[in-house]
Length: 567
Image (tube, rainbow, N blue to C red):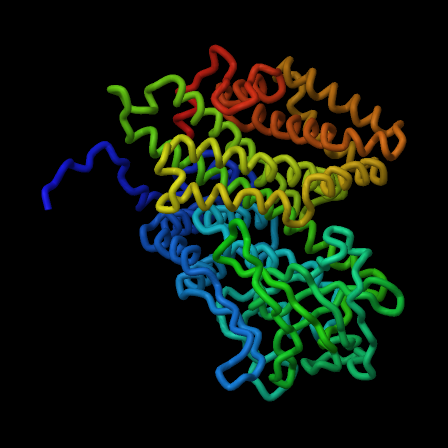
């Protein structure tokens, strides 16, 4: 064949990059809020950064998404097994994240900054392969809910959650049964039903008390796992169905309750967990999400009957935190790929990065990413064991506020970054097409926009201390910028105005209120912790009305070069 052209002016593969040390806002946040041993944290996270930036890890991320999971409802002899088969690449990714403690390292070794280090590791893995982050996040979030279970259940399962080993097979359930228990475990949750969605009070799955498992023991047998029930019903979304156990909401005699449902029972037999089908999702392709049926499925009560939402909300809150971190991870990937492209691609006689219009777009994307990273790491710090009452009150409001805003910004951010790559960005050969499909999920998972905005109203109405703690944190930047001070005063005024409205009137401004709270929180963090040119550009564009409706419209006179230097 005759060669018609040479391949030139194509961007080299972005491989062999330390994704941690190249992310200046993340490095600074870990040094500021992470564990006291900053050097040890940095070395560990640099190891993770080098791993996820390697060509081998990127190939595994690609393969896990192009060879999606497959449901095997039956074995070849017709026996029901309800298993999901994943490509080996997915298991390698998931195993690496577990080995690095991206799931439960903060619970295994609690202390000031532990959640920040864990959040940074989670962000790095999710930056390159987001699908596996679902079971990693749910296992992280399961710890406080498991702490409400009977002592025998805790002693049997907590060490597995905290383990850094990974075994993809469904193994024995423990409790002195015939099958040897696995040394590690991943945990999922199942709340949503067809008729209810976010309205879990509409759930119809039933839980009937059984005679065994009355509790009171201290050994490893199922009798010490607490009250045993049989669950019958369905769940419309059960993500990561090959997890070793699930927290499930079902309606018992005294109301909606939380139950621990293992896939394998203590005697080694399979629990009834019928996977009806896998969801055909827009994104998140490497991670299986399923519809399941429960039919006399064995579960153990967690907490009190009728207090199921209170028990599982601990898990929900922490997965919301991880939605913020995961969205920040996506923004970082988008900025890193866009910045790499424009620094290597030429058009009209110059590198794209040297052309003012393109430089402004990438700088604007970088501002959004830095604000999201700061927000997620500051939130993670608020979940450490040394959090006092004020810090806990701050996180109750700030988590909901940040979940709403950061996750909603993800999809538009990914779209603009993809456009920086031109036609290449729109192909599945480059990672931003996958990222574009991924980002909307985190705005939906654990509460879509209206659910979260209404939660913000409820927190403000019920917990005056949350208002005080939030604005004490945000107000720490007062006086640093006239634009910020005006925005801060307006946000406080809107909160006070909302408190005097009728419920319907307040609901109509819930999104506006949540957006303002998110922006003053981000503005405060940027003013206190980011370089002055970066903070000024963010505050003027997001709070001062000098930005545009689209990325790339920055206030005149801002230092675009200084912003790009951090991208």
